[in-house]
Length: 81
Image 1 (cartoon, one colour):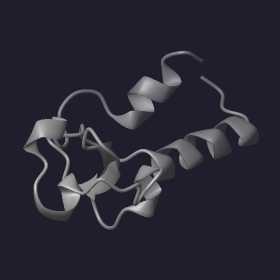
Image 2: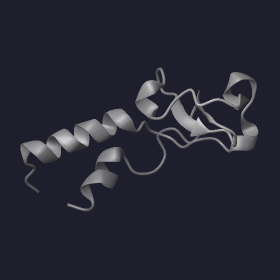
Image 3: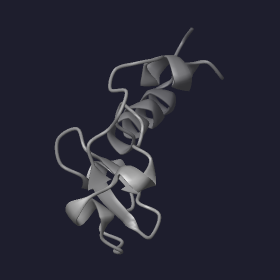
């Protein structure tokens, strides 16, 4: 597979925007993670490995579940090209 510069840039931006792992179920949120606020829109707005997840009432930065399981971002991204 040959990647153009623009495709490589798209991939790198997607890696920055979406972090590994999945969001925990909304009913498992507690403390600030359960607050009825919109504290984030994208994973990149959350520190370290935290993801921007719905808590059933808003979106907060939460620790991911299933970290490093499944296909990598690269596998998912490049499958369609």
